[in-house]
Image (cartoon, rainbow, N blue to C red; front, side, top):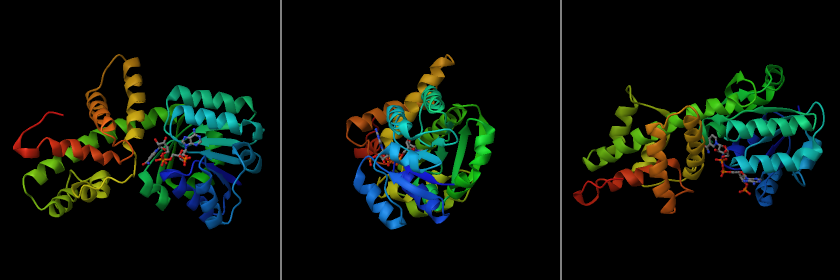
Length: 294
Ligand code: NAP
């Protein structure tokens, strides 16, 4: 199954390497060409001249770019290369409406579309251990299972177009709550003068243990916030979740609070850091012996 990938960021790079390891990778394209050239040379494939060229050369076109407008722009530019039988799989996190719009654009060119957002972080992408939550036709999901299996450990068909992204919104609200809990608790532990390596080990082994604590706990208490998952991207996701909650007539506390905290960190220039940079704000609460409000 000839597969091409558009978007070679933190997630796309790991996904591409695993597709190549499984003999599925045909082409790559990235807006910043140097990334595509380096990865194509490493993996022995020819970089595509543009998205339409990639679509012409591949049966499965995987996209993993930043935001809704970026996905729609990429879909627009690959459209001339689409034809019946091809499938576009978008692994970016975007709004349900945007996913449905992308599905209509791809369908208009005679091809099939799946919204297939992922969970598992950069580490999951590198290890081929992603979880895919997929919207679209069940038969297309089934047909593309070799591609999903090359990159992930679990693929769940959620329902029609958009339902993958609706599921991802659930995931992103939960991730915000976990980020709030872990950063606040570890800032408290550090301010209490505890040995934080021991705290992370013992707490991580008990009922409060979780992926985020395990992967980001040690780096955040050391003041290192390399992405990972960029804070600006999680802010984008929570803005989508806020609109979805508003459609249901509610404002959810975890969404509202985390958006507020992220906006302060964005204003301070930390948007390109990992979401664990929320620790900066929690640590500030304890600075100089004064409790400061966030
Ligand atoms: P990233 O490291 O910032 O990479 C973004 C990629 O998108 C880059 O290759 C960038 O190209 C490309 N891009 C952005 N705008 C574009 C446009 N208008 N046209 C063409 N290419 C464009 O982001 P990431 O962490 O890989 O995340 C990608 C998507 O996956 C996002 O929707 C994110 O929310 C989601 N996601 C991320 C994680 C995570 O832990 N990182 C986990 C699950 C889901 P350039 O190289 O030219 O900038």
